Amino acid sequence: MSIAAGARRRRLLPNLLALGIAGIWLFPIFWMINVSLQPSGAIHISGITALPFDFTPDAYLGVLQDSSFWNSLQMSLRVSLLAVGVALFSATLAAVALSRFRFRGRAAMVVTVLIVQMIPAEALFISQYRMLSGWDLVNTVLGLSLLYVGTVMPFIVWMLKGFVDSIPADLEESAMVEGCSRTGAFFRVTFPLLGPGLVATGVFGFLVSWNEFTLALVILSSGGNVTLPVWLQSFQEGQTGTDWAGVMAGSALIAVPVLILFTIVQKRMASGMVAGAVKG
Image 1 (cartoon, rainbow, N blue to C red):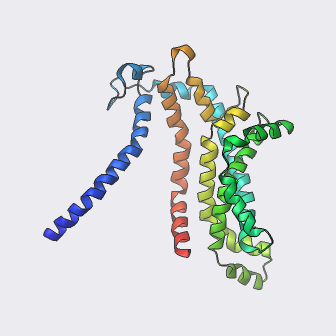
Image 2: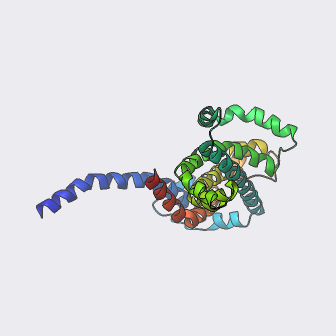
Image 3: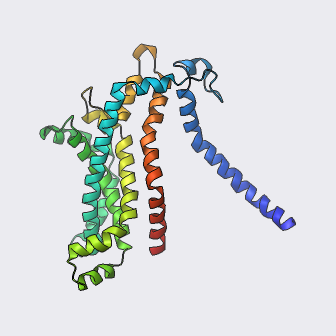
């Protein structure tokens, strides 16, 4: 009993620390849900409470009945899915080239991929806008998607290269001995094993594109075609203040597609991380 009691006491401090960290992480979510269920302007009067006394779903109903919300949802989905699709396709080809082929400048290219991630996005705004303006792609889904592709590509290439490195090249060579072409060996052997890596990096790319605000604000300058993060500005009511209940309700609804995505792919992501750790 004394040994068991000592073990429990030793675990007490780490458990309390974990609970404290979990509480800090969950508090913003609690705040968001709490404020979204209060009447508009109530937070300025009563502040945040453990449970809203005047429970009301009016903020959620107002968002769901707003046609601009659905237009922005459609815009966000189109931009995010297009960006992720193009980025995954291009990054897969780049990762395979960097992992499987030996060519002059390969090491420098790998280092360049890392350096590009260190450049502040704000430093590129003017050149990016002028580039899209010259191509007549300002205020278009394609224009914003191309910028998101450039934003997520370095990280996705770097991650996918690690996944390709973990797949033995002997598997492809064996398939080629059996009569497959190099392309056929890749699609029949390597590509299926890249599934977890594609899922993990695809989720990352989707989250970046889904939540990005500044580029969307700059590129989609017309009033009607905006993504959901930019749409949240509509709750700023000028001299009357900000409708925080609407902002929080909108934020909660914006998080729903992301939660659905994680629910669908979480097992695939977990298995991929474990497999990568074992192979590494």
